[in-house]
Amino acid sequence: MSLHSPQQTDSAQLKVDKTTLLSAFGKFLPPEAILFENEDLHPYECDGLSAYRQLPLIVVLPRTVDEVQQIMRLCHEHDVPVVARGTGTGLSGGALPLAEGVVLSLARLKSILEIDPVNRTARVQPGVRNLAISDAVKPDGLYYAPDPSSQIACTIGGNIAENSGGVHCLKYGLTVHNTLKLKVVTVEGELITIGSDALDSPGYDLLALMIGSEGMLGVVVEVTVKLLPLPERAQVVLAAFDDVEKAGTAVGEIIAAGIIPAGLEMMDGPAIQAAEDFVHAGYPTDAAAILLCEVDGSNQEVSEHILAVRELLQASGSTEVRTANDEAERLRFWQGRKSAFPAVGRLSPDYYCMDGTIPRHRLPEVLKKTAELSRTYNLPVANVFHAGDGNMHPLILYNANNPGELERTEELGGKILELCVSVGGTITGEHGVGIEKINQMCFQFKPEELAQFRAVKHAFDPDELLNPGKGIPTPKRCSEYRALGNHQHPHDDEASS
Image (spheres, rainbow, N blue to C red):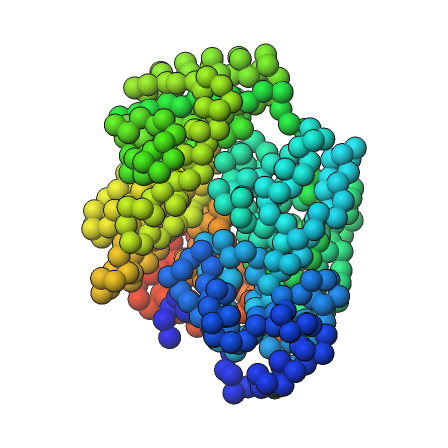
């Protein structure tokens, strides 16, 4: 078994065959909501991490919460694994199907159920696109803050599963900070409410536990999100640097000055060139790195902070500092950053998008060591960061058609993640663990800590039918990984914090 493959349930142990299962689904789902032919299953064989593919047994597409409950009851009764899926924009293999499992697509649950502009909340179904929320509430002078680069396509249900962030998460937080309440269908098909419309609820904080749980604890069927008022003004500064480490140092200087930007993003030379060629954002292509720093708020606050940021960037060794002249130019600057992933995809037949988080003050060191690893493995790396909160997205360029190159890419990606842990960071910031980073969970956490994670999983899903083989490694997997020379980081307390 490949160390990167999910742990598949032995199909011989299934209580029901495919024909019987299809017949059972047909009793409460219309024919168009049940997919089972190979040509219909192929669109569901992977998520955005396309390096791993697997056809599911069946795909079901419910339109109502009641249908979701019936699907879960049926699968639980027959011990059939279920993988919940949104639009498949995830980047860690979290929605990778199982050969003998059901994919539960939530794409048809796509209604905005209620907008409450007075309390600044919206109640939505999981298939609603991230950007659609902000579009719907803009007439009320509101917006939804978390904005992943894939926000035009990714769904709020997927954002809940991965605790997504985005370029504005530095100031306004991740999905977990912008969610009030969830309705969740359990593995047994029960509908429960977690959280409330108030700012706090008694009991254990199951809301935070569910957000970021990658579909392993329940199926989210409704989300109540917080909304924020649109700022009076937002302005962005672009700074160019002739050295990547100088740009990394400038990030720390801005935060140390007590300025909390709405967004603070960094791109290195290869990412700059790719984005400029792709969307013509106006980036200086001769720069080794650029920073995009956006501040928002009142007119006076923005004017003061823009002046202070410009001075800090110049003092940090920038070769050029440019303030967006108007809203159109501000949007172009951000379009370049948000298009970085597809833009880099034009440089190479394949790329592998990593996701790790480090303390901001270690950014220059990690950039230097990442460059050394890139040279060691002879694989180019383009770097894109949510620099303000230390969330790195190294993009490893490779060609899967070259024998052994994918395996070498995976190894380099693992080394970068372990580097993040070794400096006090973590193996993910917003993409989740899925199957991609499951080995590095063995590196970051002690066996005792992983045992507690498994205990939580079993409390919600004792038979491991919800997205099995993802997120939390088994002791056997960790033993195999460490047998290959991948050991727990020596600073256990720091590495597991």
